[in-house]
Image (cartoon, helix red, strand yellow):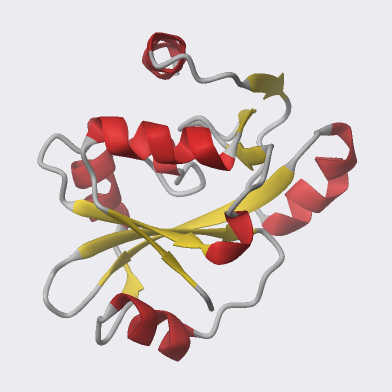
Length: 158
């Protein structure tokens, strides 16, 4: 997490950081979300039948239609990638998936897929690669971070 904070500072990305007990589920988030300023997101590390990786970011409580998502990103047979792949590609563990993990994606294998509801948000909340903290950044700064890391990204409506 220290490397992430250094990178955010180097990129002039304003952020707020919140320390808290481990949050494992959306239900855990709901219990404490009123103490944070911003929109909580859920993040899913996905893989398709061609072996391509996607990191999907969407508002935490939004229900996702997998068929719609697959069509939007031009993929077939989308599923969750294994914990082993998550560790190998992003150096993350289940429960800590977040877009900040792409800073560990040296080969830019992961395409970041962003729900259109995040566009223009001033404070989007993500775990900073560990589920005992939360960082808020703006949508514009999220795009700046992704661009700096060199990963492709796209916005979808699901």
